[in-house]
Image (tube, rainbow, N blue to C red; front, top):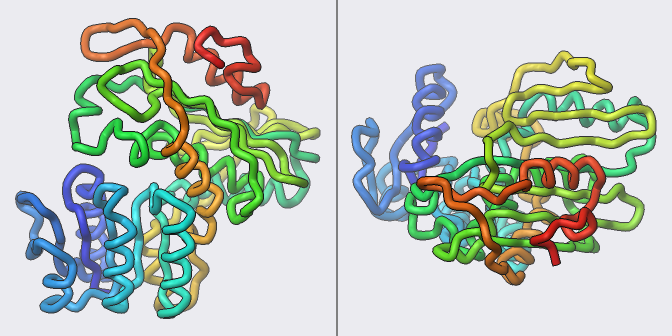
Length: 349
């Protein structure tokens, strides 16, 4: 399978490594990259745009790891070339673009996979099985908490970093927490969700949030609350909590680790998203992270791009800012399925 990569720097460097691995294993041929800047010692030809690459190298699959605002046009360009796509999250920034891409894929008989790699973990599949079998009882809520430290350099890495509409804790760094919670609540394809947002920024140099809470509700589904910050005092692995009448599941998706009522669960090996896409083309294997399963996520992304993001006071510590008390607050929100305001936080509305 001939694969091209758009965006070989930043997160794209991980795709370079994966493509080289797949090439070594004989599963894919890494034919070339598209990038506007020098990609260093990547051992394949580099092109300024996708059509010029395709004219010479004829890819069958395109991996897109470029800035979020470029995704729509690049996916459509790949589709026009007859290529299936793996696009990084956030795949699209509006529901209108989501519907357009979905229709274009259906018209051409092509597919779009989104780079939610935690959906390929064994812990995610095991947790879905536990919920589906009733092992956790009736699910009363899905919570998620993300607490990371990010320094000034995090916002200097690219022009779109910290820009509302393309970035923000729910949109980018903790996008997996949000998407995973929506999937576990089984609202990922719903069009009738309610979205309550509380977004804040502790830096006057950015327009996107660095601290956020969202509650997503839908008729007949458990409520979802995701609370996140990049202004924590200490970085800890993000966690998803599933509250059931027969117990609680705790899932550290970055670590592929799952416990139920404090008992560690055995999990299967992870599935690589690009390998899964290639097998889908070859054998019809179901996609692990299809675009269709990101509709609710895209609705939240669009809402984040339009919401008010007030500046709140925080404490500067050398090259970072700390919002005192936020570490505990995001965990309480996930545990209580409550918003910042409902928890009585001083920076809440």
